[in-house]
Length: 449
Image 1 (cartoon, rainbow, N blue to C red):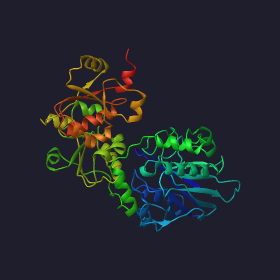
Image 2: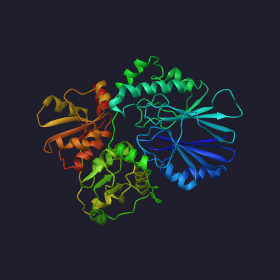
Image 3: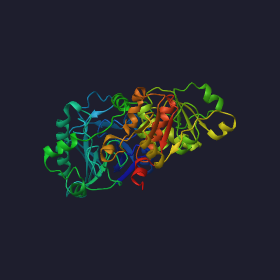
Image 4: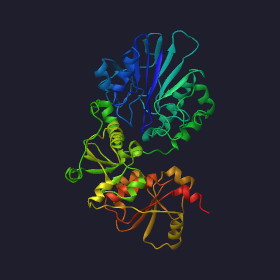
């Protein structure tokens, strides 16, 4: 038996390839999917099956693309809120043989109506399943979110409870293989590890420890999750089937003059926040490479012409790879060299970083012309906040910036200053000039003497 996990950085997406007897199956492949073919062939396997645990909301499925590459059949669950045009429907009890492996389908709705889990049986060992691909139903340390059907929130939370009981019934010995790890937007309490068993989760996972169905429903309904606008794009593309990723995931190199002429809808500066704050091209927004998967979908839309600004070539390639995986791949080019641009006389903008003493002074002074704007999510703010601060979640500034006064002075804060930099960069790209960033933000505020 062969089993390997493929992790997609940034999205914390976990896909898998499993095989035996010359055949292999891929579970939840990503859009840039040549990696699965390479790994299968390196093991002497041919991909014959592609299994989708559900219609993903946070990334583009590579299933139709991988099917074209390999001739494998794609299997998806029922009740997908539309026709999955590239997939066959799999239902509970369906079984697929791959050498000594048997993959059995388990319907596990709740996170989505079409959700499936795939149970791994080893023909050489009959005492219970070896493992299970749990998709977004069960994570390490958490369970799937249930907010995609707001008009049915109690119902779908109850469905997830029932599905989790089915998964627990597979036995403590079963290893779990979820579709996401810590850092994914698909859960908020995942453990910072990617290995576990049904038994360990049953004993330690906070949601699995809730044995009363009504109590579980109440806890899930009380959760607060954000849904970036690009989720709708992912849902559509994962019904219709997306085009293959660009063959070269590296943007065309732009000169400084070309950057002015390219007529991009967005200049996206992917350098670190301190570099952006110290000096950036006018009109550029701040979206560090590692934050693209979480926040690009809030501020960029399908078809937008995107020009990237980076410190080095590899940073451009990483940024474009992240964008391609969420369908924002109209990248018209990339520019490297902000400091050389300044040396050529190019005008620059900067955003000051300020500390705790200055925040405290401004709060005490209360001039009426300044706002401390907290861009953390609502759950974080409920735990701790700075009295006198206002609140708009960073992603919601995509539209709510229009409610703000461009002439007012805003200091952006979050937990450390990272999301605050994204927020400040977005406001700067929309013409706000009286901005600064609370470096250290809530973390520094808690440490004040």
